[in-house]
Length: 277
Length: 345
Image (cartoon, rainbow over all chains, first blue to last red):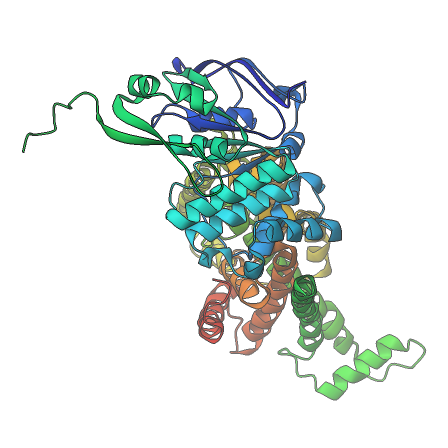
């Protein structure tokens, strides 16, 4: 039985369809990079998978159970979430934030116990931010903040982690840190990752590093493409969906030979409003 | 080491909380010594002794007993209950709405209660009906805010706040209208006085009236205090973390409203406490609602006792509480802000 199964899923607001006929399956330790142009419905699809938005058509199954029959608490024990932008309000400490990852394991009128604190501390240690334990998270940099969100998701002890554009606002070093932490979680803890991103290279990154990776490209309300990055991220496919010319190159690093990388080159059609200089 | 440090930290805040919890009891005790009736401290000690030792013959006038046990004590207890309720609801609402500028009146509780009280004063004069009307309209106002908030989708926080704003302004307008038509010699003074808040007429029956809603509300909020942490992450994240958003919010709003309505229906409108006490709490014990929520209750209780003692001893007449809370609380808040350099902010 698949860990996650999405069957003919559709969603829309009123007559305005956003998603149609989405199908895929996911097993433990797999990474799915969800890619799509702006406004293609990536976040909407993630919200449906987390049960935050109810599907209009089709079904989503977690461990074979229909998500519409599960309570928020039950879903949260299977799926954790790393938000794209976290709107910070009160200056909670990193420890207090990560402890909130335990919410699905604590009763409505309860508070986290000793064991929850231990689990939260372990999560903080795993993502490598032990030195930030008592810092107010409002004072952290973007990269550190994202690691706190990952630690919180980890404290949920779920089998799937959903990440919505986790590197969008980060510099080179921090985005690589986030990617490496994510990769290690998938590899060592067999965590399944759904990662919405604008960067096709993220798909190559996980595949290059030997993870069981799939790329899903959302276009015009459904998956235009679903498959292994090295099979589906091709010049032709990318040019068709994103209307750009690109080049896919091979390169070797010290540890891993034959890694792939995609470089965007130019728009395939000249846009009218771009004036000749 | 880290683990040790963090338990140490929680411990440090718990110790501060312990002292905060003691404050209102100390406040109530000293309130018995303060008042207009000329009782010396030794008189009061004799009254205490007589209360402890019932066999002893009473060698002081009965009025001493009345002043200490029937006037000063219920007033101090009620003040503590009222201040605590306003502060704890304010802290809860600030967490729920993720907005530090929100107070216990955000969903229209205060303006609903005001209108109820004013209506009762016009209809029946100043009697016990004021409590029932104030309490009833306070809850009605919250219910209205809640339903307005639900018109658009489920219960997104922002529409809930908007609902509160709409309902508040409707009831404020109604209060103004009632004041406009009220008898200016007989009714208007009591209306104005009620709107500024007072504990002057406190008796044990006021405590009896408000103890049920206040205890349910306060105990509920204390039970939910950690969930408030999670809810302050916002609707989407809270749900992704496994919180039943709608149910938790409904219970929270209900508890906070019960406590606030129970308080202001006996005390009249008292501003400021529900907004500022939670912030003072944050500066002292940090943002974790597990400690902040109970701390807010006891800080609010202590603050109200102090303010009420000043209200009845500063000048010849009683100064309405709503005036003093702001006049004392304002500068004190600025002082704390300077002293802690906005720690926790």
